[in-house]
Amino acid sequence: MLLLNDVLLPTATLPLPNRGLAFGDGFFETLVFADNRLRYAADHHARMTSAAAALYLTLPAALASAAALEATLARLVQAISTGPVRLRLQVWRTGAGRYTPLTDQAEWLATAEGFEENDSPLEVVDFARQTHAQPSPLSFCKGPQAWLYVRAAHERQQRGLDEIILTTAAGHVAEAGAAAVFWLKEGKLYTPALTTGCVAGVRRAHLLRVARQHGLACVEDLFTPADVARAEAVFVANVAGIRSIRTLGTQHFQVEHPALTALRDWEKRA
Image (cartoon, rainbow, N blue to C red):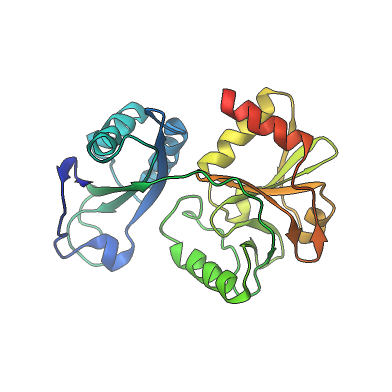
């Protein structure tokens, strides 16, 4: 089952022209529905609102608020599963035209699959050599720069890595191939600033918020790989889980750390 423009269907054929296919004129969200709720609903909707504004799109009524987003996707979840579900929500501009858009109206498609959280440690991680993070007016959202993460994933696969970390052309650490990157040092939580071109991850936003609520100092700035090498523990986080890094390049880190244990516990109770 899927949801196409708020209609529940067993399958669907998308008509052409399709501006999402032709120009990448849209964005997507990856979400998790579990325990009868949409996780990080407010953070997802905030990023969707920003992405729509950056692309000069108007979100449809079914997606127009965090509450509407959750209620809309709950219909799909209830039709297919009673367990945790991973959702993909694709939004694109309707209509034809070339580069110049003819409308600000959007169409959307939601699909679902089973979900299992993964918090297992990452054993072998390294910095990317072939692809750099690229700051842009749309780098904060998912979709417009997806080619970059495809390239990074290809390099990760070719090098036999469990995860790959992207840096900017200037050498600043940005993010993992499909997650935000964090590290802990001397009682502080560090993560790259959004100005590096990293995705404004919803789990990133939630972890920073929870950490600050519990008095854990958070630093968002520009950092080099050498800064990360001096960390006590390094981990990546996205909607699928929080995963410690055991080895990054030639550096070894703790996979269990008191502050990370506390952060996991705070987040569960948030």
